[in-house]
Amino acid sequence: MNNPKNEPAENDDRLYPEHPIVAASAVIIREGKILLIKRGHEPNKGRWSIPGGRIELGETVYEAAQREVFEECNIKVEILRFLFAGDNIIRDDAGKVKYHYVLIDLLAEYKSGEIVAQSDATEYRWVTPEELPGLDMTPQLRTLLMQTMSH
Image (cartoon, rainbow, N blue to C red):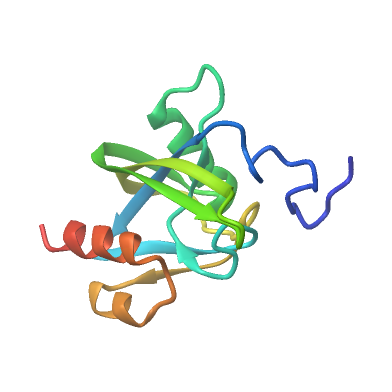
């Protein structure tokens, strides 16, 4: 099916899932700055985040993070280590689980390529730790990024 805006379809299994979806994301650091992307669709559409997405069957966590970074930003990264695992559970007004992701965040280092916001990313920017408090992102992500940059 042709979906030029790459938006989730009505029958998308990410919306009101039957089970949690496992996703891998990368905190990419280059010259003391973190790469952030602005999400193109839900959950967290329009908010700043880190590149990442669903782990595909047969793919390792590291492979998924590298693939997602390439799909969203057109760059290659080296995964350095595990950072954090947590949940993103969003309920609708009736209390039913609308989205449920198990997030695995990894620390990565930029290796090559010119960044192009694509796939789920509508824009990107490199930010310093001092810029993080003023950006629209989840509190959980802000805490993770602040802790990562302070070490």
